[in-house]
Length: 452
Image (cartoon, rainbow, N blue to C red; front, side):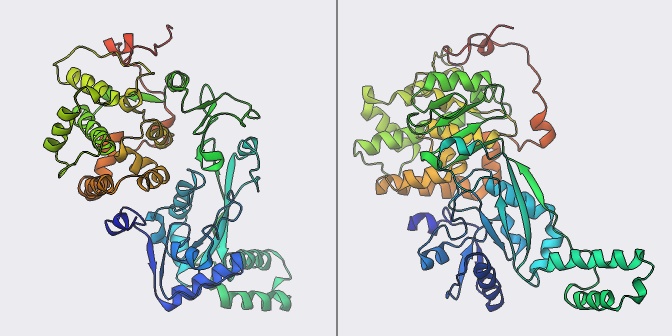
C-alpha cells in the first residue's frame, strides 16, 4: 500500500493536525467521546475526524464507530468536508457528513475557531446482529455541539433573552439577569451573532453496507431487492428478493426493470470507444499477469503483443468488448452479448438518478477487472483487490491512476459517469426517446424490454 500512499491514491486529501492548539482540541473531543487521548504530536484526520495514526496508536480502527452503525465525528475545521471517509460501513455516511458541514458552514467555521465540534450520525438501530435489522435503518439524524457546550449555552441564553423581553417582571428578576450575564461571557452577543446547529435528518432508503460481507439494499425503487456479495444463505429473513453476484440473469433483469442502467454505447456525451478500449486494456493486464507474461511498460502496443500471444486464450470479457468496439466504430455487426456473457456488466453504467453512485458501485463489483471504475466508485473493494495482485499489476494500476485520474478527477468522473445529477433532475422521470435498434432488441439480446 506504500506505493498508493506515495502517489496520493490512498489516504489522500486527509487533513493534517499538527498545531498544539488543534491537537489539544482533538484530544478534548476524543476524551469526551471515548474516554481516551492520543500522545501523537501530529496526525491526519478524515471527514469524520477519524485518524489512521490514532487508530494504530489505540489499537482500535473503530474508536469513533464502536458499534458500526452510529458513527461519531470530530470536526476541527470545515476543510474536512473535502476529505474522504475511511473504514466505511455505510455508503451514505460521507455524503451525509458533507451535507451537514455545507449546510452549517458559517456556523461551524465560527465554532471551530474556538473549540472542536463533536456529534454522531444516529439512527434507531444500535446493533446489526441480523440482516433484517438493516432494514430498520431509514433515517440518520445529526446533532452536534462543541465540547464546551457552546451551542447549547447559546440556545439557553436566547431563551432567557426572549423570556426577559416578554415577562413584565423581567427587569426585576436579578437571578435571570445574573444568569444571562454569566452565559453571555461564554457565548457573546447571540442577538447580533446567533449561534445554532439545528438537528438535521437524512433519509437512507438505498445504500451499501459492509455488514454480512457486503449488501446493496434498494428499497426506494419499483421492485425493491437486496444484492448480496456472498451467497444468499442466511439472508432468508429479509422481506424482499435477495440476489447474489452469481445470479447474473436475475440482477440484469432487475436493473433493467428498475431503469437503473444504460449501455455505455448509448450514453450521451460519452466517448464510448475510448472507454471500451481502456476496459479492454485492464482485462489484458489481468490476463497477461495471470499467465506470468512480462507486461513491459504496459503501453497499448505492449498490450497488443500480449493479445496476439494469448490468441485463442483471450478472455471472453475482452472478446465481447472487442466486438462491441467494432460495432461502435462502424466495422462490425451489432453484437449479441447476453447477461450470461462475462462482458455484459462491463457494457453498462448507471443512468443519471439520485442513486447513480450506488449503482456504479454495484457495477464495479460485477465487473471487477475495470480497476479504474472500481477505484472511483468502491475504494474498499479496490484496496482489498490491490492487496492480492502481483507487484507488476500494482505498479501498472498505480501509475495509470496517477497519470490518468489524479490530474483531473472531476473530468474523469464526468467522462465516465456523466454530470452530477441535481436533486430535481434525479427525481424527474427521464424523457423517453424514440425507439432505436438497441431499444428494440436490447444491447445484449437477452434482457428485453416489456411491451407497453
